[in-house]
Length: 296
Image 1 (cartoon, rainbow, N blue to C red):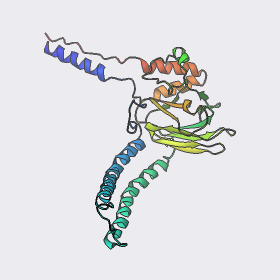
Image 2: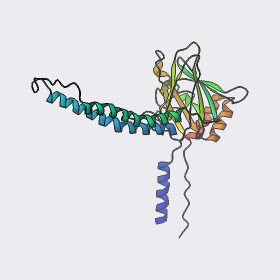
Image 3: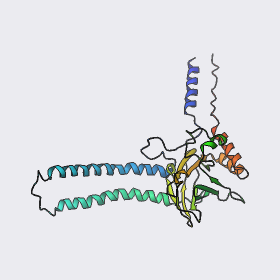
């Protein structure tokens, strides 16, 4: 009986912690950065926490100095102002201090920039992203004689049922799209970003990946990422681009390599069918097999 109880508890634990995917999106009342899904974003989050060790003490020091000046040197307390114009020690401190602080900030900052701007050789997937008022177009390079390309629009509430995306916790309002950008987990993805020749400047931003790059008409910018976890990640255009700027979301669906290859093959002929098959494969409930205790 005890062994059966342990087996039942193990099964319950597996069901509680078994999830089909890891999805990241903005959370209500979120005050910090979104959870990291790439190595670069982990480094960005570390650098943010690192800078707070300088920002908080400096802010408190300035506040204390302001209070001291207002209290000690107010007109009623100090009617005759000091005529001191120079103080060697103070001038050395306020010159050397900021230089040292900037040095401590510059070294990890340059290291982070170097990591972000150093592209790994031979990326596994290359995607061209084109922004237009107000949608995104994705084109998969080297995906066949006719490269796979499709548009991605904001998912409207009246279209949720037909798309099978009624779960707003997974497909949030104003962030979910009709066609996600599907990419494999653990692979280096090179992203070429531009805007339509007759359009305006947009910005391709995915907070969980730590990427944000402008989409400029007539210019081809590039960035890269390698997602660590499967799931659906959400971002938005981060450049004011017109009246529907707020309705230009980005959704990237990170899946396993096998699921990606199967989706890519099917999408070449029928994108809608490929998306539905991928949703069915990802959303299927996890099963847990519990070995029966045959001990008497």
